[in-house]
Image (tube, rainbow, N blue to C red; front, side, top):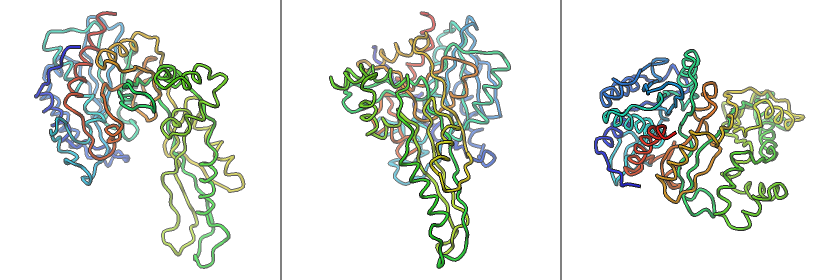
Length: 446
């Protein structure tokens, strides 16, 4: 493909966006919305053509929805992202977390990968096309949540309710999710462009065991905390069966030729060798997460002091649901494992696994063709996203929902998301803008 010219102005705009600390809080009312107001003001000043051309609607005050009218409204598409970020401490950062520092050919800071870059790349692409007099074939919508990191209840869910009222359905939706990854799987040498066609669900279970309080000098045989630990041990020792869902099957078929003859044979004959294949995939935490619902004990609480018997002990089990498993079926599994230990189980958060979008549709094929063009030599593959995105809320307005961020990164760079030293290279960001320009224009050829 042709060389992509770096826009200094676009890089400076991204840097400025990163400096605005749009941190969302789990307790919505505790969110400081002054930076969100500042961010929206920044957008209106930075992208005058986009704002003057698109129909702009603010939902729940801070969720942003735009419609760029095309020559037809018959087959609209939707490009998504979010502009809230998780908190960041300054320790272990090479450059300050909200500095937007441009150094080493890279923009540093919280939101560079997750995911202000995708939001601004959409708008940069549209601003440039509008400036060149381009009018899309069909309507192009843009939706940006402000609370994705804490569930999307005031952002994505309210945007979808608004779209439903207007009777709008999309022929394609694209959100964050998969990336182009070097070293995606052991034995796979070329980069892999992972296009999410579905995502796992997430439910946080609060498991409580009650006991008799008192002085720790006269303990019972097992305290409430001890019994809770036994329940957790049983949960960890008894995972649900592994299953190869359709996105993972498609991914394995794409990647098996790169992984050697033995793996290729196992994938092609998984009807017979399914147990061998799942046993192999279970050995790595990342591939194990692709084939089963996972359980992780992440938080626990007992007594308020070391010499007090806990009258109540609680733990939270973060559960990522494979399509086909449900929050109800997992709770039944936990209760069965608890057996003789009386437990109370509630849910602090619940989101079921998403539907699986087809790879046969036109919109997926447009994404696939552009991934092949912008990342020569990469293997483009369907993918089951292991985390959660706002796009799971959009099933009410589209059957064609995909999750892909056109970035080429290493595993080390990927692991900076929600971590220190999050960053994006100038090359990656510039290519992302060009990708979205071409994605919008690709509608003209269909």
